[in-house]
Structures are given as C-alpha cells and as structure tokens.
Amino acid sequence: MSDSRLNTRRTDVQEETTDAAESEVCPECAGDLVVDDERGETVCADCGLVVETDEIDRGPEWRAFDAAEKDEKSRVGAPTTNMMHDKGLSTNIDWRDQDAYGNSLSSNQRQKMQRLRKWNERFRTRDSKERNLKQALGEIDRMASALGLPENVRETASVIYRRALDENLLPGRSIEGVSTAAVYAAARQAGVPRSLDEITEVSRVEKNEIARTYRYVIRELGLEVQPADPESYVPRFASALEMSDEAEHRARTLLQNAKEQGVHSGKSPVGLAAAAVYAAALLTNEKTTQAAVSEVADISEVTIRNRYHELLEAEQGLPMA
Image (cartoon, rainbow, N blue to C red; front, side, top):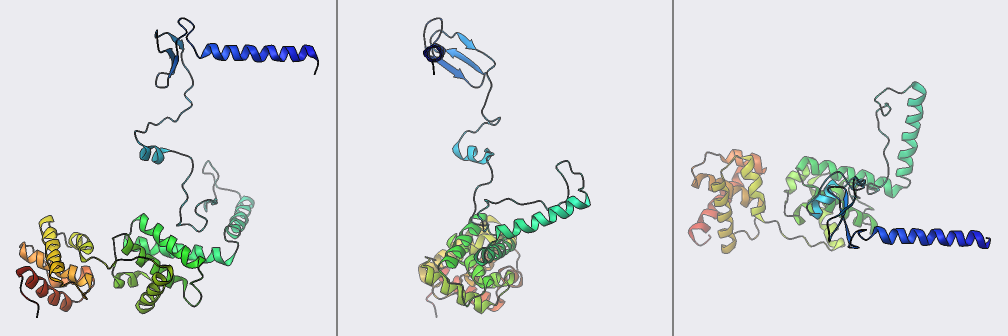
C-alpha cells in the first residue's frame, strides 16, 4: 500500500474515532448521553437535550417483567426436550401436501415430498438404539397422556429410560415393559403416584411383568423412590367423586391419625386413601357409596370396608385388633 493511501486510511479512522467519541457526549454541555428505548430517543442526562429521535428499535415487540416471562415469550426455537429421541433438534416435514399458501401440490411434487419424508425419517433414526428410543418415548408419552400425568413426569420417565438404555438394561426385557416401569417410577418420584392397576390398564404388558421390571430398574439404576403416601391419592379421588373441600380435609386428617398410630404400615396406600375418602364422606354427611369409591380408586369394596374400620378405630384412639 502506498504512503498516500495509508495516510488517507489513517485520517479516515481518526475521523471515525472522533465522531464516535463526540456521539457519546452531549454537543451542548459534553454530558453523558442516555438512550431511551421506549421513546426511541437519545437524550443528555445532564441538560436534557434530545440529540437523536426516531431511532430503530431492534428489540422484541413484547415486554417481560421477569426471567420466566422472558423465556416464555422468547421466539428462538423450541427448547430441547428428553421426550424426543433426538431431543427436538431435528426438523419435521409436514404430512399435508400443501405449500406455504395452502395450495395443493402437484402429483410430481407430492411424490417428491413423500420421498423426502421417507429419507428424513431414515436419517433421524439411523441405528437400532435411536429406533428403540423413539418407540419407547412414544409409549411413555401415550401412557402419561392416558394417566393425566404432567410434563415434568414425562421428562423424568424419559430420562430414566435413557439411563436404562445407556446402561444396557434392556436385553431380555420388552421396550413396553421398561417404558411402563419408567412412567411408574417417575410418577412416584414426582409425588403424583398412580396405582399398579391404573398403570396396567394403559400399558401393553401384564401387571406381573411391570412390577418385576420396575424393581429391576430402580435397583440397577439406584433410584430413590419413597413409598407412596396415601394422602397423595386423596385429591384425585375427591375430585372424581365431586366431594367438598371439608371432606377432603377430613380424609387427610384420618390418614394422618392412621400414620401416627402405625395403621398404614404394610397396607396398600390406594386402599387407605379410598377408605379415608369414603369415611370422610360419611362423617361430613356427603352422599357417596362404597361402589362409587371402588370404581374411582379401582380397588375392591371389601378392601375399602376393612380399611374403613381400621381408620375409624385409629381416629378414636382404640387399640388395633
């Protein structure tokens, strides 16, 4: 580069630097400038002179007042999730044969899109492990939806299954069995347990296999799953029976007294919860039957009657026979 061009370049840089420095201070009083994003103006913090107006707002059009709201409104793509085998990082080709304007595609374009969908699916599940994971996570989502489980339970179940797959626990066991065991364990860990009978109704495997696989998975993965609390079943049963808040509170009180007396030891938490709901309904003069409670809790009326008497004796402080 020649000396004249080099000197010219230096002069331009110096002028740009000078302009930038001047733009950061007020031209009247040399005070600090402040950018007002709401009004799109640059003003002097000392004298109040408006230096620039009608600035371009390069931020989002929405406002957020806390971090959670900001994350919720942000549009930078879907977050990663363990509920998808590729964690949601891949793309999907829409199944509808329409363009962006809603117009139907021609026959040649439809054939082309069908081939693209096929190859896209093949690339997303390139090996047996990914195909296994895709099938299992689909089962977990299906069962969780049928049981009305929240999203955090589905995420936990997906993580449990991924760990079981990584630690090679699946040989000799079905994908459906391990998926069901993961849902059962995740629901209990999250404090929204479902009974084994409820799990069996939505699963494609038998009850004995679910129980056996569940014990194996929690033992091999070292999961800490606390025994199900009978009180955790009460809100669901009370809601299904349309009981009042007073009756639900009374059912909780009965179960708390039973725990203090040790009545709950060795008893089915579902049976205790069902009996407490039935007893609370009678004590608060609400109409319900053992058959209705039995249908909601999916447990026999005989069990409800037996636990019912035990709860009332614990309530009165009588010694258990």
